Image 1 (cartoon, rainbow, N blue to C red):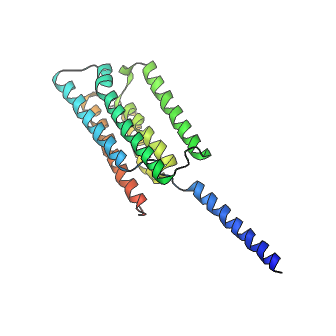
Image 2: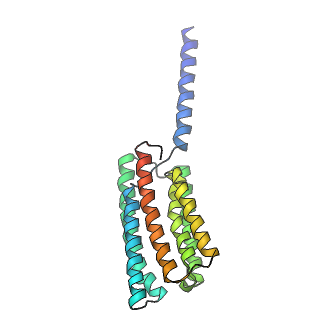
Image 3: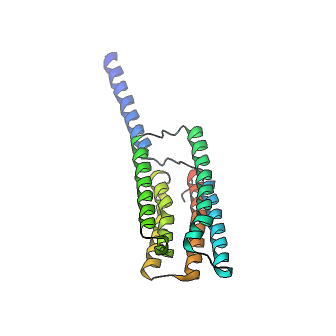
Length: 203
């Protein structure tokens, strides 16, 4: 009789472990600290301001701006994000190579590489404010998919604004400035949103 009870108890324990494993696979897995979004917001706003200054006062070619202004900003942002990622992974013992996370990372990298190659192929002059906003949404797509699912709210707002800019043919200095500052504001809001999510709020 005791053997039967022990076997039944063991089965129930196994069932509970299985349920916990399923829930663990489905829960959000933060990969970076929310402050990384703040750094991106500052960098994008700063790069937009510098780009706007040169456009208004001296004039600057798109390719020159990409190499002299935006590339350094992206490099600094990527470095800060990488530091945040490594520190967080070490602190939280994040399983970097589980199936779900691996697929998400590879899928996001593939999407970004394809977008960049297409952009280079059609020439930087084909870049528009709408496309710039859509490119800026790629990072949010990735983090909403694997880290904080509720960031899909911001993600779809950015995508919607980017598509609207593109369909309406938004162009010119004002549109470019608006696209840069819009992305900066969204990154800042996303960081605040992620912060409240981690604190267990209902944001």
